[in-house]
Length: 142
Image (cartoon, rainbow, N blue to C red; front, top):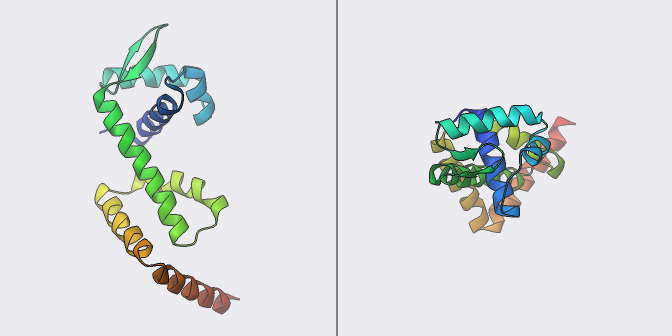
C-alpha cells in the first residue's frame, strides 16, 4: 500500500504519461512543488516497490501495478472534485480541499461518495433541494 506521498507521485506520473506520453523528473518536481532530487529519491523508492521501472539517465515507466494504482488515484481525485461541486463548494476551494482530504478516506468511504454523487445526479431536483437548504442555512447564519 503506497503512502500518501507515494500516491501523490504516482498520480502525477500517471497524469503526465497520459497527457504527454512520458514523465520527466523536472515536470514532476514542478507539478508537486518539490526539488528534483526529492523526485529522484521517490522514483527510486517507487521502482523498488514495483510501481515503476527506473533506469538511470533513461527515464522510467509505470508498471502494470503502478498504472492500476495511478488510474484509481486519478479516479478518486476526480470523484472528490465532482462530489464537492455537487454539494456546492466554491470552485476556487475545490482543488485544495481535495488535496487535503483524498489521502484520509478509506476506499469504502469513496464507494459511498460514488453512491451519493450518483443519487444527486440522477435527479436534478435533488440538487435544487440541497441548494434551497444551503440558502436557508446561510440566511440563518447571518
